[in-house]
Each structure stands twice: as structure tokens, then as C-alpha cells.
Amino acid sequence: MRRFFLVLFFLIGLTGCIVDEPKIDIRDIRIDGISEGKITLKVILDVYNPNSFDIGIRLIEYRMYYDKNLFSEGIWEGDEKLKAKSGTGIPIVVSADETMVAKFITLVLRGKIQEIQNKINVEGKVVLYKFGKNFVFDFKWKYRDKKESPQGNINDKKTQESSDSLH
Image (cartoon, rainbow, N blue to C red):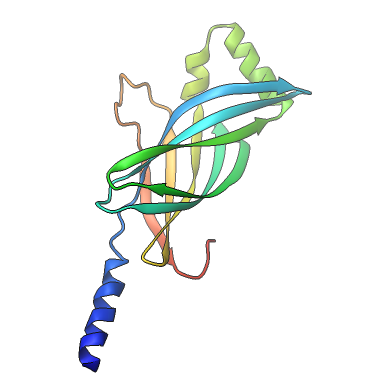
């Protein structure tokens, strides 16, 4: 009987190691507001669960770059459930300083919105949970014209598995 429980515990432990990494894309970036030399963007992250079971999203840590220069970073914390083989949009609010506002406004007035999109990159990590464990995945995303790349997802590797810490 003791051997049965040891085997059962071992199999349950193995089950927690097979969470596939999520697919992360940016669905939309919109100007949410401009005030006092700051621009606020609303960014909708699409997070897709490729697994055949539901998973939870606990945390998304992100850094946004424009032309390789960091212009915003932050953390989204929540308890979002992702159904098996489905996705959801996670809205995050991003602020940029007056230097970025001036760059963006100048480019928009010149009709160069595509140039802005081509130079925005986002990277960070996402923390999922399932089977009582946290699964941490790094991600990198770079804008690609949908005509060039219909998927637009660029995900790195699974970097960490932890049951006791989010970081």
C-alpha cells in the first residue's frame, strides 16, 4: 500500500511538469490619454493557452521598448483563468514620458504610424499556475505586420518552475 502511494505521488509530481508555454501576442495598442507631458497607452496582451487543460495566470511582468530604449515597465497581477486551447485579452496601462510623447506625436503627424509600430518591442515573463505550482515563462514580442507574419508570437523558453515564489 505504501508503494502505491509513493507511485501515485510520483505520477502526480510528473503531471505538474508538462505545462506548455503560453503564446503571447499584442492584440492592440491605443493611446488612452495625454496629460501633463505624459502619454498613457492601453495595451491588450493576448495570452493563449495551448494546453488541453485550464491554467491560471498569476502575474505578467513586462518591459516596453521603443527603438531599443526602455520607455515603460510594470506588473499586472491577477487571477485570470484560461480555458484549455483558448485565449484571453489582458489589458495593461502603460505610461510614457514627455520625450516619448514628442517622438510619437511627431511621427503620427508625419503619417508614420507604421514606423512607431515597427520599433515597439515588449519582453517580460508570465507566471502561470496549475497543479499547485507556479510555471514561469519568458516572452519577447516584436511588432510584425500581419501581412508578413500571421502568428506574430515569439516566445522564448520555459525558465523556471517554482511552488513557493512568484519571482
